[in-house]
Image 1 (cartoon, rainbow, N blue to C red):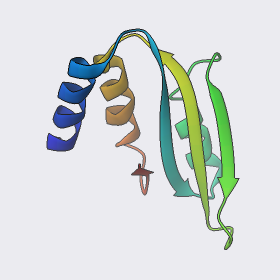
Image 2 (image 1 turned 90 degrees about the vertical axis):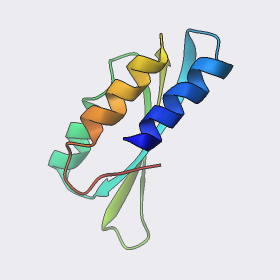
Image 3 (image 1 turned 180 degrees about the horizontal axis):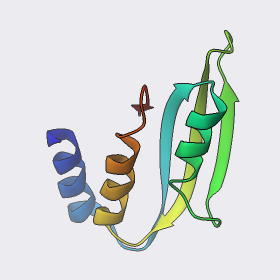
Image 4 (image 1 turned 45 degrees about the vertical axis):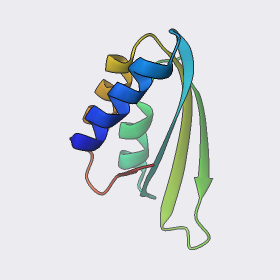
Length: 88
């Protein structure tokens, strides 16, 4: 959680709100995992998927307007409950 605390401090010091924030996650190429990640975002988010060369993983990039650093941290905390997810 130190990483998230550090991110929050950096965002609070250097950001004008609201802003479009880009999230990037890598998950196993399983429909359930992909759906869980995409469910972290609202219908206004722009979501891109990219399959790894091996086809075993999917990178998911989501751009969404965020109102505060707390909102961003909340997304990362919710994502951390998804098994085998990597947040970049």
